[in-house]
Amino acid sequence: MPIVTASSFADPEDGEAFERARAEGATDEEAFAVGDNGIGCWGDNTARDDIPMCALPREVWQGKWGKGRAARGKPVAVTYEGKTVVGELRDTMPSLDNIDNGAGIDLNPGFAKAFGLTPPFMIDDVRWEWVE
Image 1: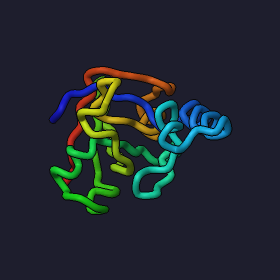
Image 2: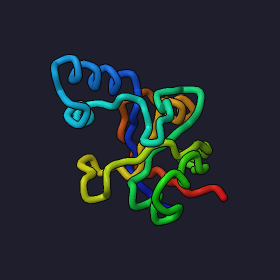
Image 3: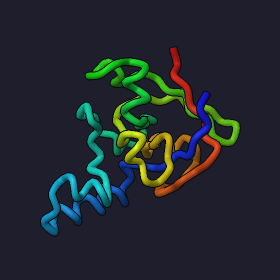
Image 4: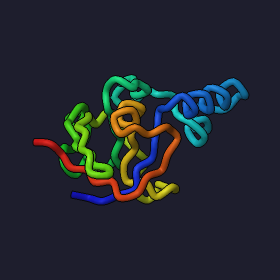
């Protein structure tokens, strides 16, 4: 079970930063550098607090499930401070070489709510594993 740093994503602050950048003329790519639109790589609304959803680096999920949509919705158990919550893989992170904040998993507002966290956050000692 990998032990990683987790970051929040698709939270309201992320969405506002993304929309502000777009309103100021940024491209989607430029806006993603400062925020998130809350839509996962497979088209899912990840900005929800009723369903725990996560994102993992592309190499991680492709290494397990291959390219394409096979990884979409796969269950992922995330453990933080002794509490385990099962959610779904619904987005991808940048490739490992392009992750600037050191995170190994991104957690949406649903995971934040389940763990009692307020986004934005960076938390250490997070464990995760595929649920099969």
